[in-house]
Image (cartoon, rainbow, N blue to C red; front, side, top):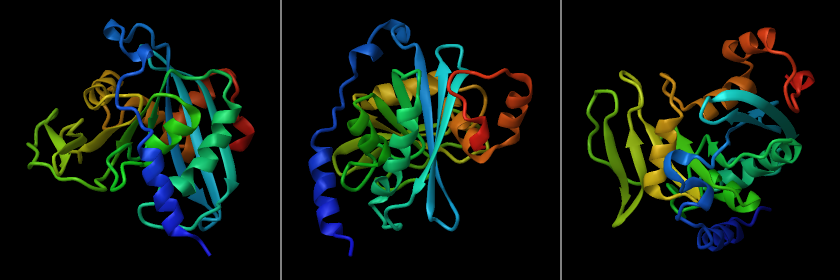
Length: 239
């Protein structure tokens, strides 16, 4: 039997350890200390029995893909609302362990502190690997925001009580907005700034767009595979 009470208590403890100040690597003008940014995406296979994580490493500021790793592990926890990070982080850690090029910053497809107990998967993973992280989610988990304008770049703060959890940002016209929140070692404002720096005309920032493409073997990734020689640590046999 799963002790959900204990897991929620662990979330609250870990949430108290999250740092919402920018790590030194992020504070130089124009991010000159940042050389590599990762995107991380988690999905499930075999009716949820297998958890799959993909991590893409991009060179910054060119946003060129230089490494990717994929890990598949047995799913250790069923889906329980509010406890998703416990279900997802084992596969993320397995993919992280394979990396040859460690990133300076990680974008995670999911929530950062925009979580009822302030510990979404981006915050949880950031704490476990001690790296700056940002949550880039496609939907809202908690908090409220004022109606968003329909134009590209429309922006509203995501608020819960008196606390700003992040931003709601329409990154592309005629697309649903992104929900951006700091994970760990990143401030609320910097989380938005870094996501904006990594856009290339699509709804998603390039790090998580690549992670999603790799995890799902999308045409974007297939085209890259056909014209790009082996790169650092690739897992072509895993696709």
